[in-house]
Image (cartoon, rainbow, N blue to C red; front, side):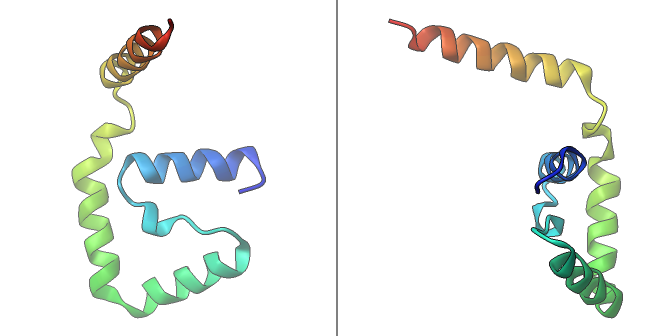
Length: 79
């Protein structure tokens, strides 16, 4: 998205492997909301996946481990 909050929301959804919920504009957002409102099975599936992955949102140890790995990868690419 064009705004910081939209990018944060997209990042959170991607980290939860719910990137199918990320939309590019308000029209697409409204269409996705209507689709989920009319497809209870899909909505329930998303709820179950969110419940099973919610601990990934506030995982400082995992964040630091991933950050350290990224730093090591960048360092190893330096000639």
